[in-house]
Length: 223
Image 1: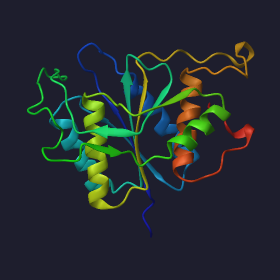
Image 2 (image 1 turned 180 degrees about the vertical axis):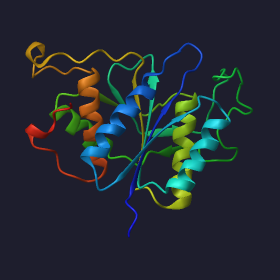
Image 3 (image 1 turned 135 degrees about the horizontal axis):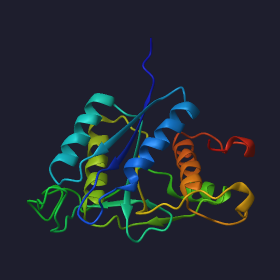
Image 4 (image 1 turned 120 degrees about the horizontal axis):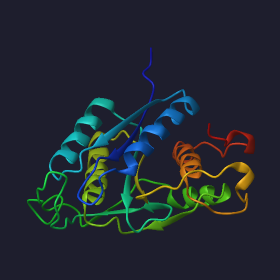
């Protein structure tokens, strides 16, 4: 029997200044919905430690074990108010403490590595399709210099090595996601990022990366 293609979703655990990482809860919820919506695929959700050494090592193990066809990473940013679609990973790391108080050993992710690597992501299509369902997003070319950027950079290198994933990308989300509005209180024309729209948007991101057409309106409801 042919093994189903794997969708790998990752979030992060806590780190200094963020005791509860919204990406951890978000990834778990999105994976649950995606497993039902994309039943022809295996959906694997994992939380990476927010640590300079262990995060890339853990990610490499996931690549080798899961051989994913689609890899989507999620992390929080204090500047994010919606989906931030990261399109570039840079070979740089800032001197900042991780979750265990450690600092990076070097100011680059990979000595001698490319200065920048483009994400394997249909960013323009994603932004347009999110806008069509009233989920706000922006496209970014700067994923920062903390663990989010490091994970995206290493993920793109791992993907190149195994030649498996069709798409690899990173999305920043707000540190705090607002509760979903009741349908009776929401404006259908308003762009709003809350738990309801975030999860609907997450499913649309996956759908776009898989090359599937947008769903009919009656199929975008999240229970």
